[in-house]
Length: 179
Image 1 (spheres, helix red, strand yellow):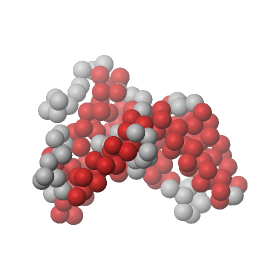
Image 2 (cartoon, rainbow, N blue to C red; image 1 turned 30 degrees about the horizontal axis):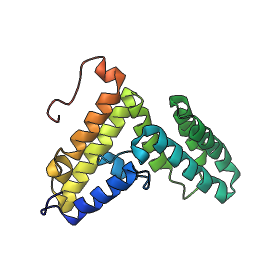
Image 3 (cartoon, one colour; image 1 turned 135 degrees about the vertical axis):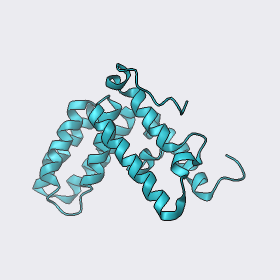
């Protein structure tokens, strides 16, 4: 951190440190901006997110949300691609209930699947990261997501996804301009 860092950069750095320490569950936007997973581990992030969302769904007491809560409970116990896909399937029924974070949950599932190496999910996440970067630029924040940090957050996210994706790595693709 330098004296030139903006308050937003300092805020991000504090939250990043807390996320790595397992004190802050990053939002989907923060993950797209290059923040580390909860506890700096994918499995810990999945477990924490699933547990929290499951409790929220059960508190509502709606029958339509019970299958989603059950899938989230299973995912908290065993962090797997199949568990993530089950959560996505349960979202179809649950999203009929107003006020549940269906889109955020769907994006987070895509992020997890991309981290497991799903190339389609990686493409979805890359598109979301690019959209976020454009939204920042259009809102007058400039290209900070692309170039503002030591390595642009967008490039960091894409490189992280590519590095964990065995499908991409088997074809020898990587983001060569970042690292």
